[in-house]
Length: 126
Image 1 (spheres, rainbow, N blue to C red):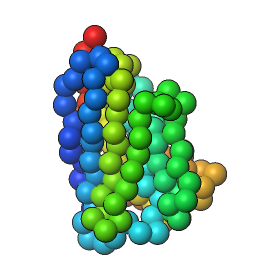
Image 2 (cartoon, rainbow, N blue to C red):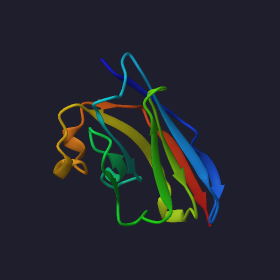
Image 3 (cartoon, one colour):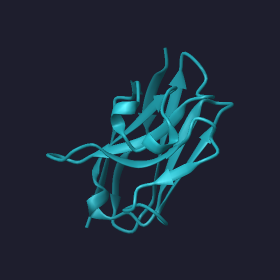
Image 4 (tube, rainbow, N blue to C red):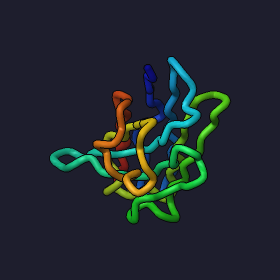
């Protein structure tokens, strides 16, 4: 069983940067698709960025392309999301998710993931 714990959220001004981390315990993330999702108040949870199970493919949501970078460290079973040029509309709770059976074409579908962290709040002030 994989347990995921996010950290690194906080308050930042628009245009600033923040890095959130996701640490896995219980087992390695090798062989898992791993992704970041976010959920703003009153809105659905949406895909932000993620890796395919092989790690060979990386995907980004349209609203974060060119500003966010996702990376992983299999040795440490950790995944990171570097967020640059943050905007107020990036304000949300950010969740880390992992799944062993996620197919690449469904990477953006939150229902494909079996394991979720508790989330970390990111707030961007204007």
